[in-house]
Length: 273
Ligand code: ADP
Image 1: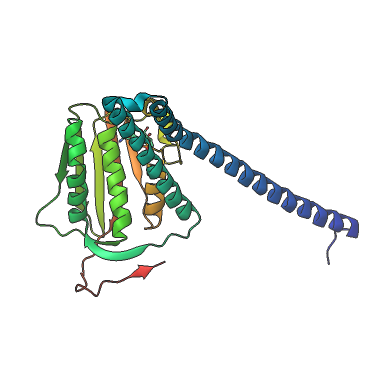
Image 2: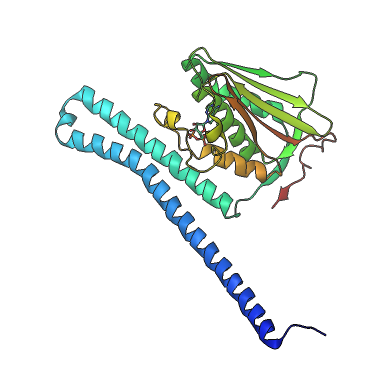
């Protein structure tokens, strides 16, 4: 038999009810704050390319259109601003779908080495323009078959390797390496670029977070790339690791499962969740 008096029992019930209500209110307030911050961030990011495009078009309308050279220059710049607006909106949609859990992951078996070769081939031009040496290390004799969402892993590799090129110095080096262990494939992207200060390192996977220095750089990014990378890897039950030293460079790495028994073509397992 309980020794608590009926009054104390009622008090206890009321208290726990009040506590639960307070928790609910806290969560709602946090959500509202999150939404407000998110909208403020988005508006801020959208403004930059919109203002730029407006500026070029109004200058053209104010008479610059009559000069062929200026006309071409401003139209090209306006087009570039609209392209970056397009990338930003695409990234926002992807991130939104990922955060709300509606995005589908389609798993197939493929060779991760071939995918990395494709990404590197695509980024080679950007690297050589910046005089960055991009190298890929793997063992020709090894098989690097994994089971993953190929398109999304392409995006992960593209973002990480492009960042390593983008935040590098002239004559810099980016080394991509692919290794196997008993059950996994390990991808490592190492650069000898500017590095990331420890206080920023904790936050670079947050949406819109950019290290102050890179904000000032000409290479306009959206600050959404690493947030997308993190979500994609979480969808593969994997995670991204990073270590960095200012002035020396950064290492980003992740793992995917190694598939030893390759299924015949056309009989690949399709896991859709
Ligand atoms: P962004 O579009 O700005 O490149 P990301 O989400 O890909 O956005 O990266 C967030 C920030 O992390 C970047 O703005 C940059 O400051 C920093 N960063 C990412 N990768 C590197 C790297 N390899 N070296 C130095 N800084 C990096």
